[in-house]
Amino acid sequence: MRVTVKICGLTSLGDARAAVAAGADFVGFVFDTTSRRAVGAAGPAWIRGVAGAPRVGVFRDHDEATVRRVRDEARLELVQLHGDETPEMCEALGGCTRVIKAIPVGRRLDPGRVAAYSAVARIVFDTASASGGGTGVAFDWRLLDAVPGDVAFWLAGGLTPENVARAVRETRAAGVDVASGVERSPGVKDAERVRRFISAVRSARRVERGGA
Image (cartoon, rainbow, N blue to C red; front, side):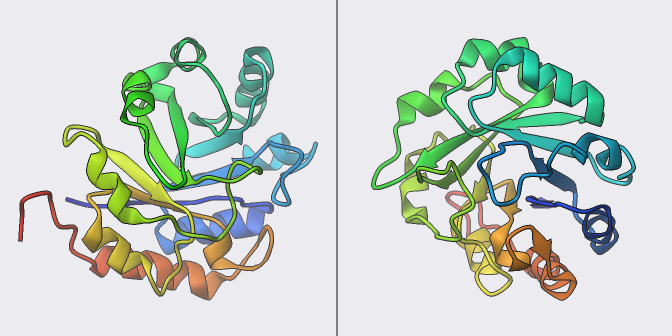
């Protein structure tokens, strides 16, 4: 099965187009103004010029009206929620077709929280942090053994061109989500690292649970 790749934290039209050209399946743009990778007020205008891969807006504890407004302005196909958004809010924003919900993973994983968001389009497991993501630090992937086998998820947190193939092999992630691991500096992507990251994912063989 093909493992999808999302290049996130894009802050310029050039980097976004380069990610698409390199083969990214999704491109992500951060609208949390506290993030070093926030796109800023001009973001929606240039993001509309990105074509060739679904555009994902990343939000953290924004109210529903704000998410809807920015989604429409930037013509986002999906929204990715990294805060304490409720399952009800996820459903109201499009649930199983338009919402990706990030669940932080620290020393343990709460299966009940995973089950609560079963109606979203995708769950992404990311390293727990006060900032909601973008730490460049991986969590213990073995914790994902607690995820029910019928849950298709993405993996984030500390992924790089050097370790993503192993991540794909050792987890049953349906996709991977990277920001800092392919950057020269926060929000500025390194085109060669982006290409190497995507190539490593494409060359790795995902091992299904119970498989060889």
